Length: 466
Image (cartoon, rainbow, N blue to C red; front, top):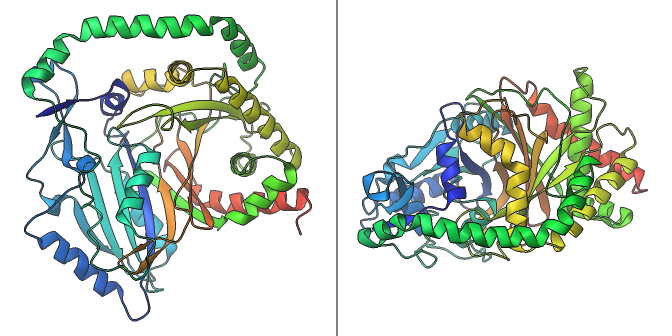
């Protein structure tokens, strides 16, 4: 039984190589309840692994296939004999068992490829934190899920009830959202009909784009002027826009969401604008310390979720291009510049249909896609310097069998020409920045969370928050 894979999802498989793993990840840190220890939770995991009958979440039970029966196209096959021992693993941190050791382990785990002959996910239970907590690092191939869908899966695995016990293991999420498999003969028929289907889609897309033509000139003009929208014409060359190796470096830190909310309120902008201003200031500081700060401002590609506008079981994102104001020393002025750019971009998207947003976003991000399809070369100069995402996480405290989710750190994907990625995820009353990069191309990456915190303080001072 096979299920066709969308073209966007298949790009993450086509573009993957040893130096360019295409999986997203998350680091979750849990605090056991009073009277419980990490050992209790290790035994829960071991018992779950030994369970004779496993009900695996639908997304975690599918593996990619490609061959004669799929006419050379990538498709999904359901694996009914999953060896959980290959997916669920346990680690113990070396002493002193602090956050630095945890980040080092996650950096190492994030650099290895997922096995394509199996469902493409791993879950790692990490013990040895000196403060009595335990961590869970999960990685899932980007062809399987994007950040928004991954957060939905996490919420289903946890509970808002701190007293809830006998909860299922994180990989046992049921199949309520499973897409129906397609019989082989129907799959073959669908694939042989692809030329006609593609022609109809092309005509539909052409109709959508034709309707957008009157505003296309304005969109390009905004891009030439460095204004907000789904396109950017050029960005300065930086030390981040270079080929990368397989080695990864990951660092993270969290701040109370209320601090960012107050800055946003005082400056009449959004929390996401504050996130971008913090990132722009941190990158300005990082590059200036290396005498590598360009005169022109860095440009960020900011993914925008379209899950509330389109039907998809996989990836559903558009993009906005935003100046980061790295050429501006004053943090308040930088925030204002970013807020204006994002407001212009959102206004541009509001004039488009979801299909038009996807088409324009694909055009804006196409240099990275082309680079992936051509083997991650850097012949195509990207029109942006860094990808910065902000994914909304749980808004209330979450628990797994009584253990409270203290921290939720996103771990994302750098690619050739884009050696650094900054992703944020909220959890209850905190916002965590996860910074992922190529270990060789971004030295001293672990200083970026500290710089982000310093920029938040500068923004607070700039808007009059003592």
